[in-house]
Image (tube, rainbow, N blue to C red; front, side, top):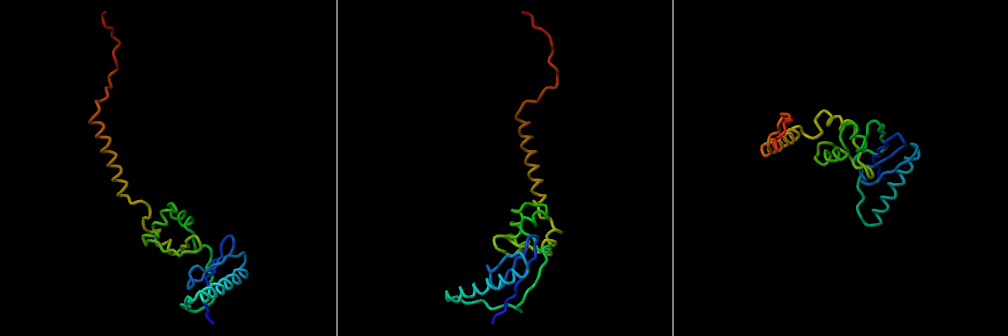
Length: 164
């Protein structure tokens, strides 16, 4: 009998569970007991599907059992973006660049607090050098316009009348 490691996440709205050795196997529930039953059922169903299709069943990588992670240790992409003060798109870029570790969890990504803290110490927004380049490019455009346009006179128009 295979025993897989199951990671339980206690969230603000309920529980979620995942099985790292079986990608795509996860479950949600309102209570801890409900989530344990659902994830065990999902594992059995997944293994039966693999065997029925003649595909190999992955062996457990380590010791089986349940591991609990508190909600404050895990962030979604949107929550990580809020913590870092950037957009969710920027968080996804950091993940794709390999600067931020994340795990696929259903349709979203799960980011551990320790990984978020490691990135938080470094600049994660748009690099300052690019802003300076944009500012200098704007200054060049303005100076080019000034060179092609006649200077603006600051003298007031006189109220003299011309003789007819």
